[in-house]
Length: 212
Image: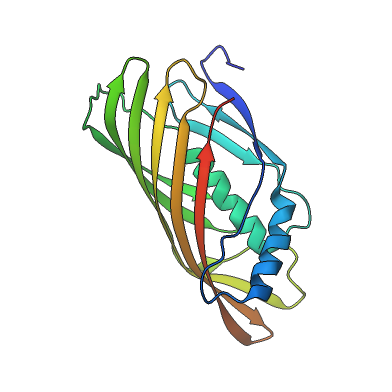
């Protein structure tokens, strides 16, 4: 639906979430991850895009009782969904033009900074093709992770995410067609009564958005 101000409200569904096996990953870990990701199939969400292309809001309906790892994954998906729209600059642009958008993001578990650089590749009729380069980063901070056992604390020590996306904007469609690939690496510290352990996580994310 479209508001009088030109804001477009939309809904989306995550049909499947899969794990691609890589050399060196224990089969037991792959099995656990695949079982966990089954919880994500069918999850729904909503969003709002302003008339200038800015994604004003993206919300994934998180099921109760998700493990912290899946909660973080869905938070990442939520933010990447927010980038599958192209905020247009106020001034006129043409093929070859680039512009950068910097913004802070307040996730459920922690706060990050984000930088997205857009490049307008071509314009043909009602369609515009863009390429995106995105980066997320965060300072060391405490993590508000639900479900931690009593006496345990979790702290983010390092986070870095980089990715690229190709997007086609069709002026006759409410949302863009886009493909995104990214790599996220972070280090979290778990403190259990003074005994600390680092948990390192690397995720590769591949996402496709197709309007219906």
